[in-house]
Amino acid sequence: MRKAVSNWYNGQDAMTLATVVAKCKQQSGWSHKDLLKLSHTKPANDGVSLVCKYIMKGWKEIKTEYADKENPEEVLKVLSYLEVVDKIKHSSDETEVITMIEEHALEREHLLTSHLKSRNVWRALLKEMPLRLLMKRLGKMTAKKILDPGSTETQTVCDRIQNEVILKKARIHPFTILVALENYKKGQGYKGKTKWETEGNIIDAMDAAFYKSLTGGDSAEYLEPVDKNLVIAVDISTSLSSVVPGTSLSTAVAAAAITMSFSSTEANTQVLAYSSGALIPCSVAAGMTLEQVTAEMIKTPSDCTDCTLPMAWATENEKAVDVFIILTNNPIWPFSASPVEALKKHRQKMGIFSKFVMCGLTSTGHAIADTPDRGVLSICGFDLGAITLIQNMAHSMI
Image (tube, rainbow, N blue to C red; front, side, top):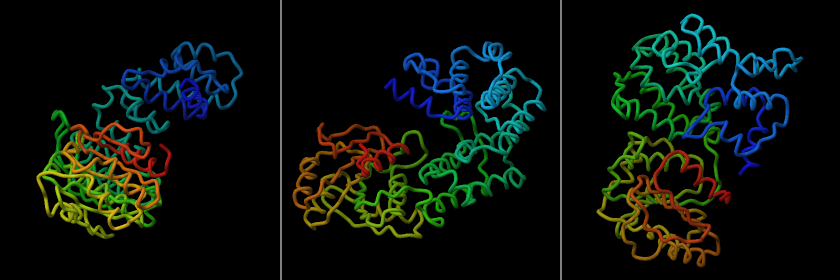
């Protein structure tokens, strides 16, 4: 672990590392200082050494230490950047703050809370704001009247959001766009303190971005294909009416979006809807809307589910499946047989090492027995990281 952390710091160029450190000094109770102390990192070059000293000592000591030295160009560049980062935290002049934002591409994390009370400061941030953060902050900027209906800022934002070139460069997953869209449509933050009137053009732009990220040009530009035979089986019980924690998405819509993201890149994908005793093939074709896919998957709801059905179906029909992806809200229903045993039967029948992912879209617990089988993965709760885990497992990276 120490080596991995050290390699991360030494693997960055000095300016990139300085930017990361200045934007986020600590997260979840851990600081860069904690990591450097525990990893015993030895800087690989002068630039990384400067940033590490900045982490441990702060700007004042670094400024004094490097003042009389003949520093290489890389070090001078980092010193200049860190000086601006320190200066903006001591400035109360709106014009000066805006100038520093525009000249040095500073972001919201570099600023004080008092700076963010200014609309003009937000407008300056908006010009170079990364697309992922822009989507996340649409509600707050609408609440602060930065994105008023018909304003130049709103039109610029809408153009950026649905620009295919910008979308491809940002490599934002469709699920991330959908979560941001649904959160914006809700009209208020999670704790209800920040509220806003939604703007129709922004909603339309986000909706267009979602479909472009699935099908715009070459979808592989947005999504990394795993090139495997997949079965995506969706629980169609009434439990899918609940909401994915941390989002405004129902589990049914989330399941549809996940299915669409895999179907758009994987040519060999079979989508199934399953319940207590039935298995229904679903038609998920290019050009279908999210609403159409959701309706297709939940047209025959049931009270309980059995996640062994997709594997039994593939075994009986002699369909070679590399990865079974089970999407459900309630994976604790009693099964007619062990999911692990059903998976083993399919492996034996088809002669391949099939894998099984049980993805609970909410944190309700799991009934899958603990198993050392490296081809079985249980995911409790859902976010974009879950999709990465599934892709890695399909690639045999975990």
